[in-house]
Amino acid sequence: MDKDIKSLYEKLLKHSKVDAVYAYAPGRINLIGEHTDYNGGYVFPAAINLGIMTSVSKNRTNQVKVMSLNMDNYFEFNLNTVNTVKYDGWQNYVGGVVSQLIKHGYSLEGFNLCITGNIPIGSGLSSSAALENSIVIALNKLFSLGLSKHEMVAISQKAEHDFVGVNCGIMDQYGSMFGKSDNAFLLQCSSLESTFLPVDFEEYELVLINSHVNHSLGDSEYNVRRKTCERVASKFGVKYVSELKSSVLLAKKSELTKNEFQRANFVIEENKRVLSAFTALQEKDLKTFGKLLYESHAGLQFEYEVSCKELDFLVESARSSGEVLGARMMGGGFGGCSLNLINKESKMFKESITRTYLKKFNKKLSFIAVKLDNGARIINDE
Ligand code: ADP
Ligand code: MG
Image (tube, rainbow, N blue to C red; front, side, top):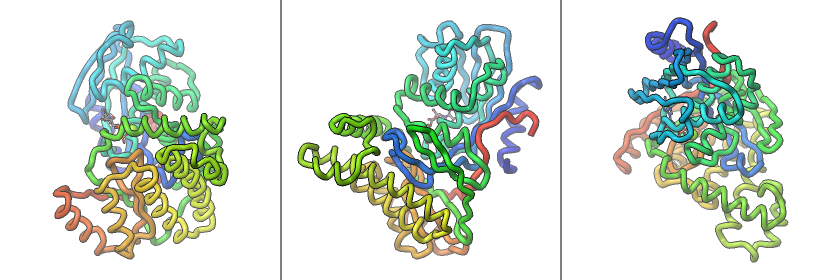
């Protein structure tokens, strides 16, 4: 845990009881493999050194009393009415996790919950999954529920589906739960088989550039993409589009709408890119890895159509700078961050892109150099 996170912990300590359970869940990046998770394909995520902390303590009532220091906001609800309360925005993530635990038959008592974190919210780094995971892991400990990490991941994901209304895949919650320091992991999203890979970018570093375009507008488009892919899969009689071969898809192109073909083709190609990227990193072939990042972005921009002009500009500027080995938009799309593999010695790039971005979009950029870190855990003894 880095210093910044330690100071958040101090903040949390001030707001919670001495006998509280303290939990931490990190955000995640995804090296490559966008929109492949809910299509049963491969992703290549890693937990990062930014995260969310929660403290929970029993309050001997039937009320759940919740404070988010980031939101500077408080709300409470009764455990008996968790499913009928009308929640607002961030409150859904809390209500969602509690509701899922109750639905799964776990008995809870009233508790106080305090939340704080340092993940830029709504930037594609999965502050939402970190929030869900940190709550479920804290409650699991507080009430000795005996949930496995896999079960907690499923609860976090279902909370997001049912309460927030985003039919997200498994990657975000999984990446935040299972991350390992200095490793990324290849995850097959239907079997949940995973393979860790120690990652060393040598003279390069991973830098996120936050476009400061909030991706919330993308939630409905995300669900539309998911439905389109499900429709294509059912036309081919398979569970997931990622199971299809390019040649099989091409042979039936005339039976698909233009959109259906493009979306499915992207998923198939992106899935291949994830495997190639894994091999490239295994072989320490950073050049090929970088090239795959640029190709992934082009697919997301032109075929899956989930980018936006700001992200396209960031990636194009990275490509033409000569200092960035690879770059692509990261996350569901329509905003958030671009992921860049930048030469550590690079000086010109950050300065010039900041200037041109401000001029073109009247927005400031921010840069976040990320380290690959451990996954969600109880931190009372750390
Ligand atoms: P991302 O997961 O990429 O950050 P999302 O839109 O999926 O973006 O999730 C962001 C939402 O998660 C926020 O709008 C808020 O509702 C909730 N959230 C994230 N962090 C916190 C926090 N520290 N306190 C309260 N709510 C949070
Ligand atoms: Mg999210």
